[in-house]
Length: 252
Length: 294
Image (cartoon, rainbow over all chains, first blue to last red; front, top):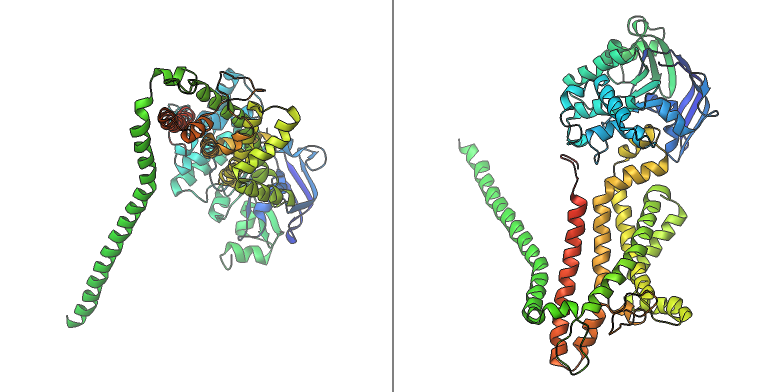
C-alpha cells in the first residue's frame, strides 16, 4: 500500500544556485500527483529530494523536512533505505545493458543479496505483469538484454524494475517525454492502474498528461510551489494568475 | 533556362571535387591501415621464416643444452614466463583496477585523484630498466637473492598505470543514468560500483588489462636485475627464474648459430603465446554476452 508524503519548508541548492525555495505540501497516499511547470522550475529537483537522489550530486545541499509514511527520511533513516521504499523512474529509460530482462527486473533484490529463485521468479513475473510488459517479453526473459527492447518497452521494464522491490511510493520524472504517443498512452494506462497500490508522483511537461492521470497537480515556477490543488481546479479555475498564464500557454 | 545553366555547371564541378575528395580520403585511410598492419605481418613472417624450422617437441619440453652441445629447448623459459606473468597480473590487475575505480567513481575532482593520475602517467613513462633497478633495491637487496617474486613485482608495477588509466576511461564512459538507476533502487554505492558500473565497463577494462599484459610479456630489461634467469627447472618464487625474453636476449647475443636459431624460435613462441592468451581471454569473456547488449 502507498503512504502519504509530507514536505515542510524544503530548500535545495546546487552549489550556490538556490533551486527550491521553502516548499511545503502534502501528497496523499494512493493517488497520482502531477508536478508541472516550465523547464528549470525545480520540479525534478523536488522529486529527487523525495528519495534523497538529490544528494548524490556532490555540490547539492538540502534543508527542511520530508516525511514519508510518518518517517523523517533525512533524520530517521539512511539514504539507501529510503530509496528501497521509494522507487524512481527516470526521464530516459536506463535498463542495465549487461543484464537480461529477467536480471534487470530482479536487480533490486539480487543486488541486495536476495537469492531465493522461486520467489525471484514470482516477483519478476508479477512486476512485469504490473508494468504491462509480461506478454511481450515472457519468451526472451533470460535470452535478451534489457537494452535490446524498444524505448517504450525499456521504460516499462524500468517501471517493473522499480516495482520489484515493492516500494510504497513511485516517483516518475517525465517518464514518457522520450517516448512515442503509443508508448506514452501505455505508460499513462499503467499509472492509472498502479495508483491503487502505490502513491505516485509524476513530473511532466505535458499538461494533458497531468490532466489525464493525476488527482492533484502542483505548479512550480522559479523554484517555488505556486499552487497545489485538485487537478480539476488547477486546469479549470486556478487561483493564481501565474498558474492560469502557464496552463493557457501564455508562457513556458 | 539560361539562368539555370550556371548553377548546374557549378554543381557538377562540386560533384567532381567531392567524388575526388571522397576517394582520396578512402585511399589514404586504406594506406594508413596497411601501414599499421605491415610491420606486424613483416615481423611475423620473418619470425616464422627464421624460427619455425627450429621448433620441435624438444624445444617445448627440454632444458637448454650445455654450451657447445646441439639441441635443447626453452621449456624452463616458457614456464618461467608464465609464472612471472601470472605474478605480475596478480599484482598489477587488482591494484590497477582499484585505482581506476577510485579515479572515476570516488575521487573525481579531488586533489588526491589528480595526484594519483599524475603519478600513473609518470610511472608509465619510467624506462623499464629503471623499474628493474628500483625493484632490485627494494626486494632483491633486502632478500639477498634474485627471485621470481622480484621479477613478477617489477612487471606487475609496470602494468598498474596502463590498467588504472584505461579502467578509469572505460568507467567514465558508463552513462551516469546507469549509476542513478542502481542508486535509485536502494543499492549501496560500493555494490553499484562493483556490480553495475564495473560490470558494464568490463569489456573495456579487460582490453586495458590485455594491453598491459602484452606489453610486459615481452619486457627484458626489468627482469635483468630481478628474475635474473635460470638455466634449470624452477617454479619457486624465492629463486631466480628464466623468462623467454631473457633467454632470447642471451641467445641472440651469443656466438653460436644454434643459439641464434633458438632465439628466433623463442621470439616466435613468445609472440604466439601473447596472441593466444589475449585471444583466449577475449573468447572466454565474450561468452554469455546477451543478445542486444551494448
